[in-house]
Image 1 (cartoon, helix red, strand yellow):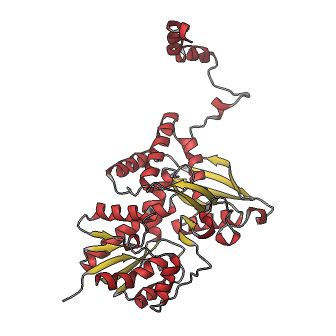
Image 2: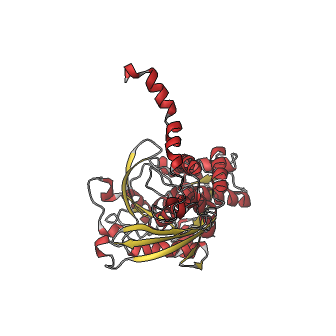
Length: 400
């Protein structure tokens, strides 16, 4: 009798490496490890072999880097998506894609069980669980890391006893999650929000004090809200994002250190490196400033914030998120143009912007000669604009 198959979302890290023998020993499943490559993964073949060494029946590497950018990160970019106004959601954006790939593999193998290594305190358990259920409610999702109650040192001992070695030690306790859109560093001394993040926690951004003494500029081109070129050269999505991230990080830009409100109800200290995503969001906003009407831009800001919350909360595939993305796509038809960013000592600033669809009219904006603004209309406009509050004030002047 064949064993029941279980699709495991595998990263090659501590928790998912331990899950392979754990689920075999406890549940008797035949494990199919699925590693979804969304960028910045090193030695993917070594990770695939690690899963097999741990006891997986099969181990798959799925290259989803471009799909991640085109179908998840760039739609979020159109919404200027930042959770709590700061975090570009790089982890949250990858989870629905990982869930999508898990479901696809489950259908290929005829599996009805899927599992992940997310812990009970994290947001990712919600994102993967809910996304899988949205895509195929018949699949049962398991999160064994929520039940085994092993500490990180105990997990290392558990793996060592089974001959599985990882490049993680009890003296190097950081938990890393990274992809093309950013990098998160957690655990260890970072759990104390008063302790400054040590230099060794950062990999892609230099200390601003050590950044070059000369500023660097970069021109990012957009078409319908999507970045398509750097300094006038059209690039594929992966090369473009990696190039922006590299330049920003080399100048010390992109570090975030924040106390974040997790979906599960706790506050968590989070340290991020997000040079590429933050640069692109900044540039995208500048093109919107030129091309969107006041009413659309102000209303879209509310939509952006709501979609950011839905992404963070694991509801990418929800009807509301789909509807909001449709609205945002409609808003981006004329969000095309170029923005010049300047990097210097940890800062990134927009210093120029232009668009063929720009609503900025220099003849209306100028205070010099050639001014076409109707100054004589201003008094009447103000009179009518303030009329409702004037009438209210007359009726309630005793309460003022």
